[in-house]
Image 1 (cartoon, helix red, strand yellow):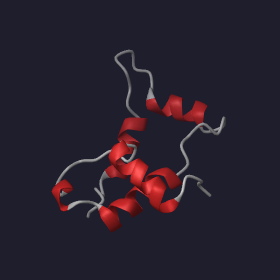
Image 2 (cartoon, helix red, strand yellow):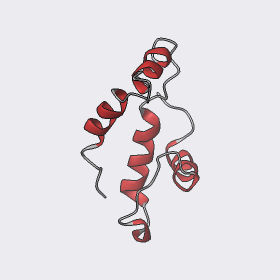
Image 3 (tube, rainbow, N blue to C red):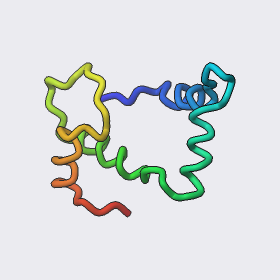
Image 4 (cartoon, rainbow, N blue to C red):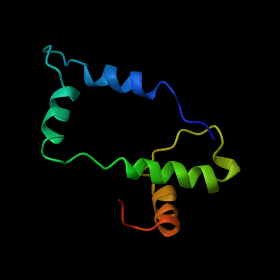
Length: 85
């Protein structure tokens, strides 16, 4: 399994992206969600990555997967539990 390393620069570019009117879009959304504590906890993608590292089928090799895909979240919750700390 490999984690796509350029994810952080891509996210930074997306956060700084502007719509056709020149307004920052993702950065403004982040600024609203963060203070309201409405961002997903980092344990969600971490649990998915841990599950994939341990139990991903070989047939998924080379695929791009979303951490919130039910094929990942359900068995990950069964393995590691529902509660996040």
